Image (tube, rainbow over the protein chains, first blue to last red):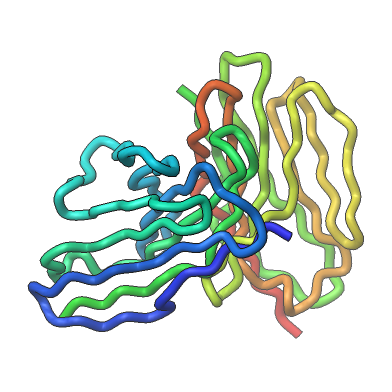
Length: 115
Length: 114
């Protein structure tokens, strides 16, 4: 149980394009989903928290107009990197929990490379 | 503010050796939760364990064991008889009931050589 998927697993795009990453909880309803960013050999950095049906809460320093998050259903959250630039290249990983205080289960991550 | 310290950046062992990963946390809260996650080269974080602050019992799951000591604010993780498949980055994490955000340690890279 508690399986989280992400799509795509890899994406390469040109600078200036937008990229959408999906995060799905496959066998449970996730009231809360989290989006993280991880640079090579570093720990995870929380970008934002999304609750189903409401606006995402962004961490300090994360541009909400740059990283659009939508949590439209209890099993799906999307992260859109708008007008991507090479500095946005990173490993993006989502997690989901039954509710805010519960254990977070992580997806397999999405590697984004912006050329 | 909470803080999680994993002092060991990298550990390299030969297969079948035991390896212990240290995790020390700082908090003023009396109720909190501790976690260990494994991140293999594929990138996915795999949940290993969650421990509540009021439960100091040590836990064993197969070759994995955890030693929680409130007196020293430590939550150490031991892999017994390590295998090559144990090679991964291991993260210790902390959370309080009032804050859903996980505070992660820097991670410890474990390399198990055949």
